[in-house]
Image (cartoon, rainbow, N blue to C red; front, side, top):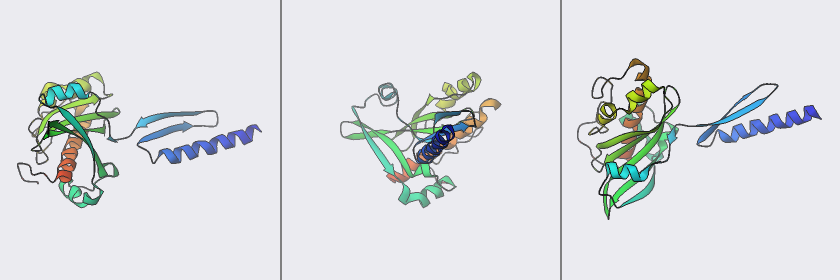
Length: 214
């Protein structure tokens, strides 16, 4: 009976793993003959806007309302790939956007996305003006070591995002300040994600920006 129970338990575990692979969060399991241990790991891609009131005051102080939208880009994958310079991923088929309103006027948008950093998932938030330029950036959550976290959250580094758009270089040492060597991997992932977020938003909106697309 004990062997039968173990076999049933194993079958149920693999069934759960198969289902979880199709959800936004991936269930990661480590198993051996003695024990089963499971934990949830957030996947890259969409993530919530966690501090709406604070960010609205900081980035859009005259806003009066917010409207949530989910933009589907599966029909524009060729254009997304052209602007990204690579094939788009499954996570880039949709973009959650928070439209920032002043009465009936759209002041801009807020987009948030999970990024895979060196030490875990990083949540990047961008405030984007109606013209496609970045108004501000914040890291909602990150699990990097203290030295890395300080570099990535510094006003000097995140402040360099302001004024950038999808046509910007988004490269460390070019239009973005350098960071300590320990932070470069995660910094590069953040910059690639920021550029991708702006491309997705622009393609979905078909909004012009200043500068030519390389």
